[in-house]
Image (tube, rainbow, N blue to C red; front, side, top):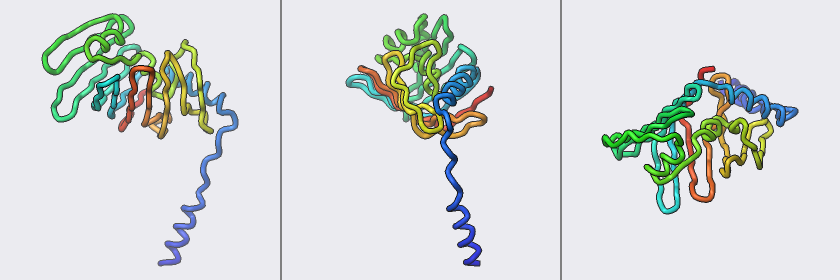
Length: 196
């Protein structure tokens, strides 16, 4: 019995790590194309935001369907919730305390006005997936051995990635770190639901 356990343990110990891809840049381009076409996904987790002298940790539920999105942010211990729903033409923000709704054509301006901080939701829509926003120049791109981004810069934001995991046919990050001169955010995704 002990000998069988030793054989089993040694067999598990010799499982080789997957070899790095031959051309990470090519894998990145393919990955970018696949993720930019991803039309329907949902992410659930937490977001910690720090803006100047203020900060908050909130639960996050984001559903993206084409160009339309619905984002729900809940404060801990019944501290209230905010729902942000929008598309390229309009964004609506509602509060669980019965305030609002507030509308605007720009989610960034509305977030800054109502919450005191702002992140570029159009860019974040792609960044959270481990992709760059299409049509916007990418700087400081650093890829891992598998062609996934470890870091990129867009729209004045530095985006760092950690802990990719498979979710369906996609490898998606479970940790995304964003910062610019005024705001930093840490997103931890506990659950992805991806529908191609």
